Image (cartoon, rainbow, N blue to C red; front, top):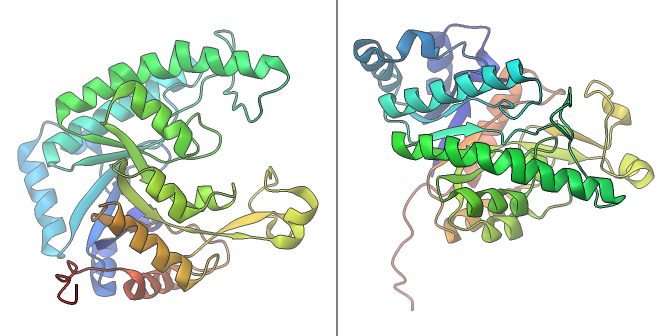
Length: 320
């Protein structure tokens, strides 16, 4: 398994500077934003698409820093009920898939999106409970009329390009846990998989090891990000929390650098579960810790994960 970083945390500095910093830290892979929420500061499809010389030079720059590209990321909401917003994200998605194909990057990371509750909606509607019956009808309409039809076509587009789609299971979108991820995968096909990010699952009460085994064969990429769950605040208000991320002392949970939400044993167990379920690709750090600087938070994550990752192939069982 290789250690990687989503370079969006360095979006305020040139690519060469970011790559040099990551090479110095001993990172082996980069995940690059190409649109949507991660932006495209380090990899702009408008400059690279259908431009083989530019792509060759770009890939050489990555290789010159002893790095590989693990994935292109284009998180957005192509199912947004506002047609202009949806089309913008859809264009970014298709550019990302085409660019990944031309760059020979095997994975595009993204969100499933979330529609509204009807064709007349202005905003997405994320359903979180089964009653009153209105919610059940909204869910049926969203999946049958919007989610599955869109991703059947968009998934076929990715298959034709030879690219896998790795969905981050993120609350607020229709794919937010392993069950909904497999629901979409079963409807569309194995092109759909997870960009497994435990931080969004931890606060939902999901066990990382159990869910990794549940998703065996369906994990295409992995984000290394942690979550601290505040026992005092969750004891009072539970885990659903709409307060701004800036109100840290009041929140039920907060994103943290790996090791600052869950301990070393938890992360070692995650790595072991990934190996047991045949995931042996990249663990890509996504740094979103409000209590740490970029450099310190990233440095601690790299140091922590170097102690956690299993990078060599297992030995033959000479003792058995």
